[in-house]
Image 1: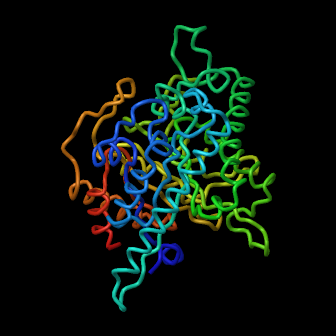
Image 2: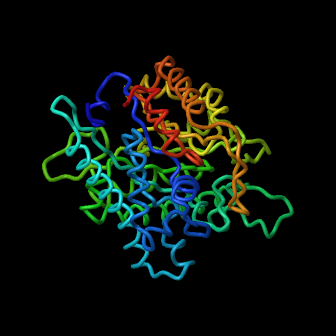
Image 3: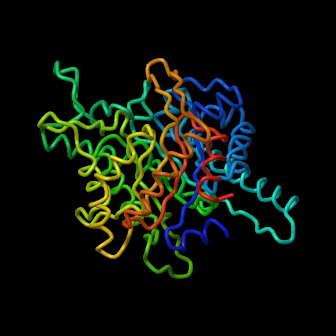
Length: 390
């Protein structure tokens, strides 16, 4: 059964790849990717290692591979001395490297399969990190964005990632919408690349205003590029918006955003901002949690359950996308990891239990399950076996 066919089945489960950054490139292929470009660095300097990393996950049993574009944005490349045209070239090249890995993997299967075996398909997800991932040091775990994207912290002794002024909040949403729309347009304006992408993954989003901005950017993209939204019948000649998800981050089991009352935004509030209809904004195909320790997933999903149920009552169950960390702890300032004893089969068994719980909740259309930081091909191989995908 192909991955595309699995999507149509009752409660399908697809396997996503693992951590390309800080895991496969560093730990398996021993490349130094420190610096503001992170996983984008080898796209131009060492493209073959990107292809081999994708292949390692496909051979491990992944149905979906994420492109190496997580930190790719015009401002990231400009800070490193690249022109906007150079940035565009590298961003598109990243997708083409995933396309090449897909091609090679399919050729491998054709060369080795027996007459009774069915070829596994491969799907490509365009990885788009939050605005905070383009900053140096990165701010996707704390959500402290500079003006106009966030509060001006130079004028206050209190460190906060939330506006008290509603007009400044709206200005920040507009700035973030422009950021996400311009980056999306790079890929949507290149038909060969856009056609090769199966999913768009907005990842590690730490702020509700950025969730709103992403939904606005998708709406603007669908309008200006004449893309047919997901779930709307397609006419001949029309291009489709891809299946897209918004994945949120909960580093310590809590969402990074502070409210004006001084508390953390709840996971329920985050899910509402992501999934519920708001000013006729398009709703994502899936809701995700990534770059979060696996131990927090059951509690977080319990908070999301009622929101997903409310969406399902409206006639469309959302997909759930889960790709937690292996358990190591990341230090953004030093870009180093503190190793924890949770890997391979043990990690995969915990993931299977989480997926089983999501199935029992009966509010999700299906699950995409994979790994984030420090999960490599070994973890994904074990996960694919646990879920019966290989």
